[in-house]
Length: 347
Image 1 (cartoon, rainbow, N blue to C red):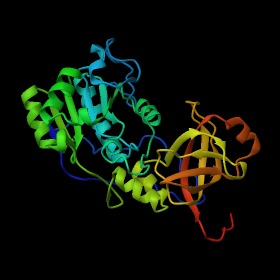
Image 2: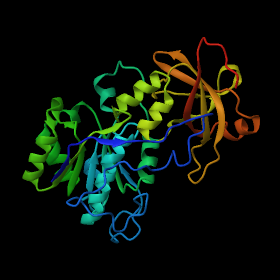
Image 3: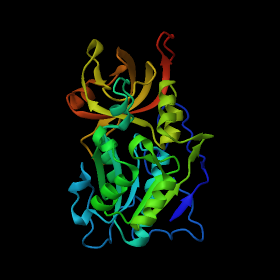
């Protein structure tokens, strides 16, 4: 068992100028500390995106997604598993996955992630407005790009939440997943009433004979990298600050429909509603996996009531609008241009 209690400091890219993120802003960034002399050795057969390319024949050959811990086939068990909600996949989340990937490579195990759907907050605070940073399908795509072999998106409801910490470990991690090692954050809580923490998990790991690593906080610009921090920046009209915590611009996904004044628009649905106003964004066809064409345009975010919002692409070229109409799209929110009620600036 290992523990990384110290904060991890990063100096990340600075978004400057007219809205485009710098080269590589949407790619993987260094999100873990260098291994010390007593830590795991560097990966022996992972490429830069942690994709297995000389793995044992019984390993998963691509991302395998499951909804219940009881449904995992044996080839998707016995993994090193990072656990968390992973809403937004910010740099703190990436530190967990990077640490798990290093350990998985060292012991020759698949790389797994255990997360929960719906988000626990939606179960316990159903009256709360939209707050999600990332849709489940987007999270799965990013997990695949990060080299995750097994993604268990465990169905979360009040019955599942009623498991005691020991039952959660015995039923889910041991009987269901047969984990070899688990990686969690320093503030990890689990089990009925959030009664379990990292210390209890380590004790249960000793009892059930699996390893536990605890990753310390990741600090960006003096702030702990967390989903709450990202939400605060977006609600405050600070997408550049949110991008520094995420390691890339914040993205939303959905299907373009005709919105205000006929502009191609995206209903943000369960996504968090950022501050109303005009933004610099990039939009691409979400169904294109390899090198999609990105269009740089302006978008207006407007409040539609009940905490929901609409994002209208105000100057998308007609040919691009026709190509993307009715298609699933990705919209990367890069810059805040001006707020509702302010005079339009010179663009």
